Length: 332
Ligand code: TXA
Ligand code: MG
Image (cartoon, rainbow, N blue to C red; front, side, top):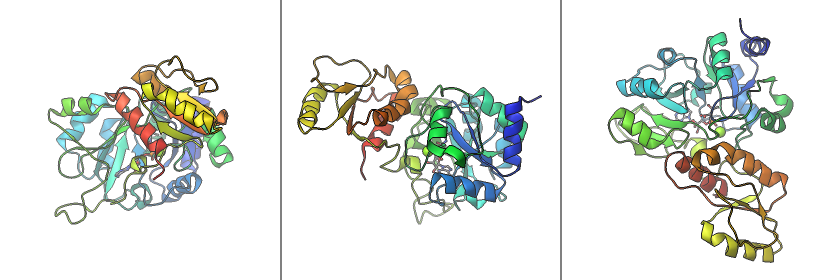
């Protein structure tokens, strides 16, 4: 028997409503992936352009056969190695997948999340749940239920509270829909882990689908995935990525201009100017990933004009954290 919360959430999905639910990466804003009107509501609530596809979440790897026209051996290898987990596979879509889900592309993104409530929801619902991150378009992703409520309020019919997300940055997206495997978005799973599981190298690139004019290409979106747009994940405070040894000088200059300046860094840095508002140290790469979006929100809560951000070393999940900080910092 499903818990009362799960039963209520399944009911909302069946009626075409929106359920925010926890995953190990970030909270998702879910709708029945087979119901185009329900999926359209996601776009309206997020304020997201309609040609940006959403990921379909399923309860187990074998369910992807219902959504993908073709599941190549590499997809099964990655599913076996990393699902449930922070990995999204892009595959050729099955004919019945609504355009609202794929943004009109000929591919579909699929993922089995590693979070007990999410899995219970997906199992009880039985179908696929289309879900982007449960934040307004371009803003900071939510990693707690209260972030979702603060951001989306009454626009979401039900919020399942699973506590804080354990990974804290979005899934790694691997495109297997044409040519060799390509990582479209760095995320919770490292590129090295992906290539190790496949037994061959993967390309890391940011554009979904084959370049225009590639023969045999499937004409997938030539739109960059939003998580790969230069400017994304941004708090209201301006983010500047700086090296640890440059923080003091930059902070002094900004404080001298009368700005409210904060610091986000893996560890405490000594000898910094008075008046610099240091957020609690983010810790090593995993801890940094887990607290990243919380800290970006905290920067806004403190009313900072500028957040100086020292990234973690760019290995493993640290690469995803550094990527998010650069995008948060970008004004492009
Ligand atoms: O960790 C995650 O992936 C979270 C949780 C909720 O699962 N979801 C998430 O969704 O980050 P969203 O919509 O914020 O980002 C999904 C990314 C977007 O950049 C989207 O463009 C890309 O996945 N995507 C989805 N389907 C795609 C497709 N068919 N082809 C290329 N990119 C796709
Ligand atoms: Mg997102």
